[in-house]
Length: 483
Image (tube, rainbow, N blue to C red):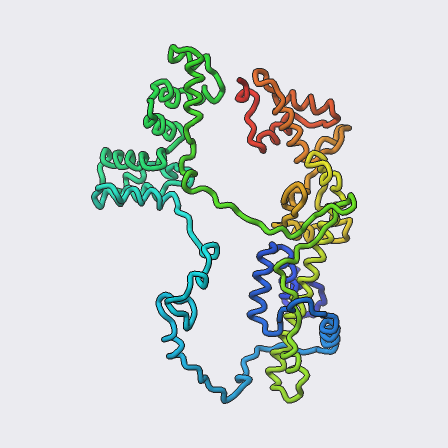
């Protein structure tokens, strides 16, 4: 068949995501703090937006705004017209303004003799915590080192992670330096003995060995166990360790207590993770024996359209380009106000559906969390799963039993396929943790035994499922829990 080109018309439908729709979708995924920041930025960029102060009645404002939106149909073009106020002259005395500042004042005309009460409080000052690298470098610069030695030591420090371990092999750093191998090893030893002791080690055994050699009372047995028998100690195989070093099990257990007192991650003593604070989007409170939802509107400004700029639209003598610019900003402002309102309503619907489904959870605790997936909530409130997913992303709910992420409530049912009852993953974790907490330390429960005990409660789960959730909780297997 011959291939030829021809022209033709064809009609088709396609989904276009407008900038307004993109903004609405973006608002759904933002946290409370991010949304308030976005609103503040929009208020700066869009002169049509202004905040309502106090308890003003906005019914008339909303009614007039809706009427204007119904009658206004305008096209938007690039606005680059002349200034709205022509002939205006800047008469501000900038020279006098700059001279009114001095080196110790934070605002014009503030005298050096201002009282301490006028200065910002310490709580409002931003401080930066010291990193592990900065802490080590500060100590290092107090040593008497040559330029080459200092550069090599700084490169070592730059390759230490937050836990205190070298991220690259020492040989690679030595190969790039101008120092001899013995000299480089000596500098590494110097770094490892800085505070906190053990930083710069390449593995756990080396890190613990450095700390053990600097104990007030050195123990040869402790150092030997760290060097050769850490795997046996992890398995609680005291008999093998005692046989290898010709000592009693009691001495091995005493050495174990000393080793447990050492720090496997010395870098965390300095570079501890900063606490991340969250602002909940939803509050849940008990009213009349039922739990109800309230949206957190604190910090969210109540917006309205500025009367000043609305008058420009009504004014027949206004510049045409200025009027078009104002109309464009008006549409943008109205869509933002509508998007914020829809966001709050959607969050309320999702949160209310979650609370209504999980009443037993709020009354009796995490053990009564019901299995629930995004599709269940989406079907109940008549929305798409993707919308529910966006709403529950990075959103937090403050409840009487703690502040929880909305994603916490979504757990697929486990154990219901083979005739058992469905149970949420979080509830299964609690049951496994409870069983391990009440086990005999000399005869700890294996994963298979836990699976069998759960089956007596009509929770049918496989051994590998028990192992999966046990590992998620950071609990060691039975062989390592045995005492």
